[in-house]
Length: 195
Image 1 (tube, rainbow, N blue to C red):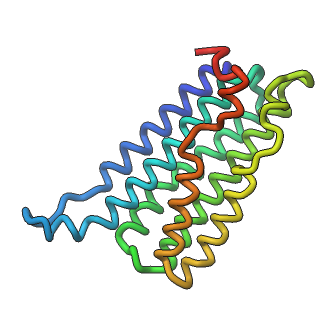
Image 2 (cartoon, rainbow, N blue to C red):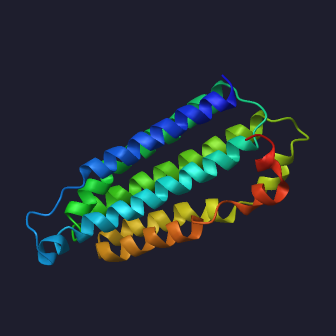
């Protein structure tokens, strides 16, 4: 399979997930601002989840643009990532409908944690499949954000049982940390090889 086909498939899955998420949003049961206020938690959860999916889409794009070779392990690692991302609409809906409950916030964090780990696995499989002299190996090097994110997700999961709002803030901080695409790939020029 070519990397273009892999990227197109992944883009399609992420687009479908965003569509599912927006379809999960229900309009308020009234025409007043007060009716809209009751929907704010689900709207905020939607925004956070949309940002996370956007981050994955953006970084996935940059990573694949810098990839020279695709193999079966990369395909499976990519499917593993897409599986966890496919659970985000479910986690978003449950957490958004129950903003003060511990279990939904913890589950949302677990989905984010598993997606983050799956992305790291995909990244490592891609690096392993490249030639020894591949610039991608050097460019990725130390991955501070990639290594600190699972720790923050675990912290958020734990805090979900203390105060779900604290865990939500931690999840939002991870999103803010990742909002800018990985500059290591952009600075190297690897992301410009194929468009």
